[in-house]
Amino acid sequence: MNITLFGSTGSIGLHLINQALDQGHTITAFTRDPAKLTQNHDRLIPIQGDIHDPAAVERATQNQDAVICALGMPLLNNEKLRAKGTKNIIHAMNTTGVSRLICLSSMGTAESHKLLPAKYKYLIAPLFMRRLFADHALQEHAIKQSNLDWTIVRPGAFTKDALNPSTQTYRHGFTIADKKSQAQISRPHVAEFLLKQLTDTLYLHKSPSISY
Image (cartoon, rainbow, N blue to C red; front, side):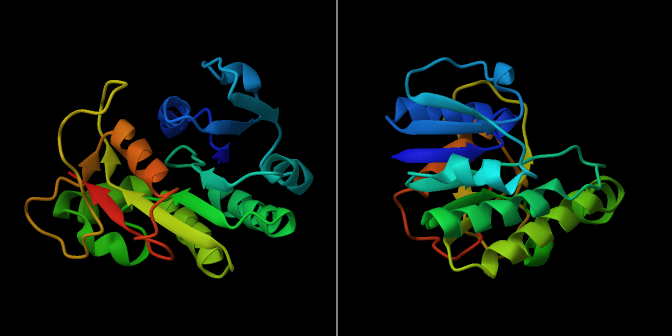
């Protein structure tokens, strides 16, 4: 497939590019600074642009089969880049006729807040993740109001991991918190799950959480 990736130089973007190329996909990597792309491949197409520039975002989505949005910002940043950028992505996709959108969000956003273990729910989230959840909530609302074929993926906190996924099994789509949930998952497994949504409609118009 031809896939446009927003957030291509982030920690999830690295794994998305590597795994997508291994699977035979062609990746158009949207980035403000192509020099930050560490990979070099004939099916990796860097395209320079700013997510705040609707014209640049539209150019990046032309002639694509799907879009993956993995935009990120520091935890305490309050610019709401995810929400603003995603609105530009939605508009661009409507203009260029691309319908499949897979978006990276976070466990703890909206109704998934109840899935967080107590230490996250009552300590870490209020102190450090309040702005992140607010940004993701606005981002998710814009997506759900669109007419796109969307899937929103809500991973738990990222673990320290190697480049290759481990053999550990992760859960997805659960709706009830339990004591077994670690609310954590490796970045390679997040990338793996995001890419699976390209050809799987199980979570079409849904927002599955994923975690060990």
